[in-house]
Every structure is written in structure tokens, then in C-alpha cells.
Length: 186
Image (cartoon, rainbow, N blue to C red; front, top):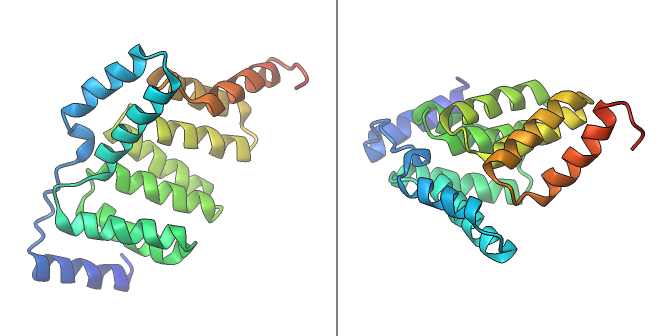
């Protein structure tokens, strides 16, 4: 652990009484119903609303400390301050290792920094914690596209569509990649 992250960790433990017991929001019971609704709807507008609800549940936490840190991560990402975001996310995954969205956001930062293997590792941790994380699965497809590992990209996008059949970009990529993997010209 880098020193600034360790200092932040100690600050959080002693100042806020953080005990490391975050309720990992991927375990929220509302998610099962939201995913059922997502599969049952044919309405694209309703699907987007359901997706937003799922993202809100994944991002939320019953820990004010985690909420504060994640808010700062989102702010840093908005300013493209990726080093700052990475430091915060390193702290988040240390103090809440079962919080899937911490790993997913860090995977995004690693991708933006061109650290693709680190990104893949964090996506895999996200999926271990929340196998229905269509954002992580879709992101994995994007990573493999960047690495020109088209068969792996196709697999990731297909898995994302099994979880969320309303991912238009993933549908387009699957269509393109099936041709490419089969050796047809795109």
C-alpha cells in the first residue's frame, strides 16, 4: 500500500470509526427484482431507467465514509485527475474489499491509464463479487478490443448481453466480432 493511501486508511479508521464492514451493495435484495424487470421489458426508455436504478444501487453504500470517498472518485474522474482517483480507489478496495463498484471504478481508471492487465484483474474481481455487472463485462469487451483479442472481446460482450439485453453498443460489437472471429471481413 502506498503511503498516502495508508495514511488515508488510518485517518478513516480512527476519525470516522470505520470498521471495514461495508454492506456490499451488489448484495442489495432490490437487484434481483430490477434484473427481472430489465429482462422482461421491451421498452427502451424503461430499460434505461432500470439500468440507472441498478447503477444507483451498485454505487450506493450504507457507509458514509465510502459514500464520501466514492463521491470524490467521481469528482476526480470528471476532472480527469486519474492519479487522484486511483489513490482514492486503492483506499476503497483496501477498506471495503467486497464492494464491487470500488473494483469496477478502479478497473476503469486502469483502462484510461492504459494499464490493461490491471484493468482486467479488477474487472474479474468485480465479476466475482457481482456476476451480473454488465458494465464490467462490457468494459472487459472494450479492453479486449483494445488488445485485439477479438474472441475474448466477443465472449465478454455476449456475457454482458445475457445479463442486460438492452446494451445497444454490445449488440453492435457482437455482430461485428462474430464476423471477424469467423474470418469474415467487417
